[in-house]
Length: 84
Image (cartoon, rainbow, N blue to C red; front, top):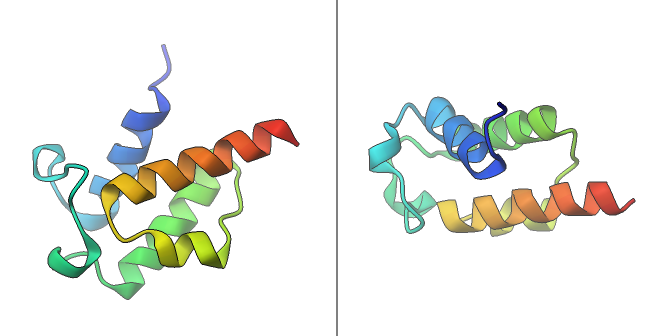
């Protein structure tokens, strides 16, 4: 059985930032998470693009300021890929 999309997004997020899953929730934010710096942000984008075969726009990259937004925007890009 494959891991669902939400779980895969959270696993990648936690792996890249070195955080435990219990430390991450929808309000986990870029500006209040020490491990989430600009380099890690770009590494997250790269991992999501590789894992899901998507291309995330610059506007979406900039908008990813909380874990909730990350999850929403990655899922939006996955859906757009499926629609094309």
